[in-house]
Image (cartoon, rainbow, N blue to C red; front, top):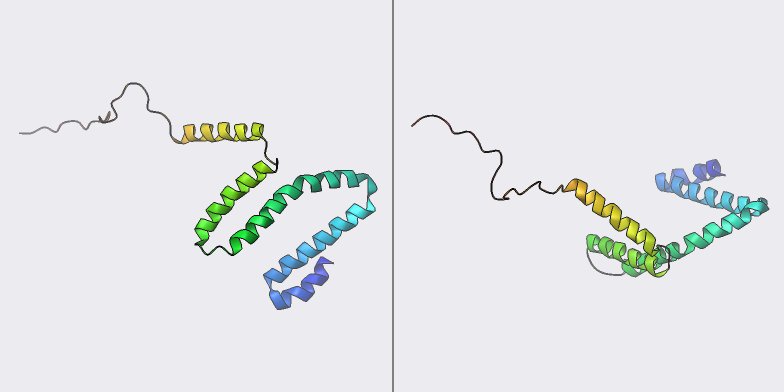
Amino acid sequence: MNIGLNLLFIPRWGALGASWATVISYTFTAILMYLAFQPSREIAWDGLCIAAPPFVVTLVITFALRFWPVHFAVKCLAAIALYAVGVWLTGTVREPEIDHLKVMIHRTLKRVRPETAGNEDPGKSTSAAPARGGK
């Protein structure tokens, strides 16, 4: 199926046509697998239930920001913030996961910005250049 769609789509749309051909064939295959293998339906349904809330949040944010007349960078920052709030409100991300994320960020920042050792005066340099001889 993917090869046939590629033969149809690539001459007209190039790489975009190839990506759409892949999306269509993967979607068709997923539906066939769901229908053909009854024992896996429960697992597939669980996966859909887990994936649906963040997918809906993403769709809402995408369509809402599409019509907001601001710079692209501002839209990206707004999308990140809205997504974080959306997955928190839908229960996709729970409090223990947020606590774990805080710990990971703290550890990373500690590695990136090591604290100064001892009682050194931040205004004084510990690597003073030796005095040059002469008058």
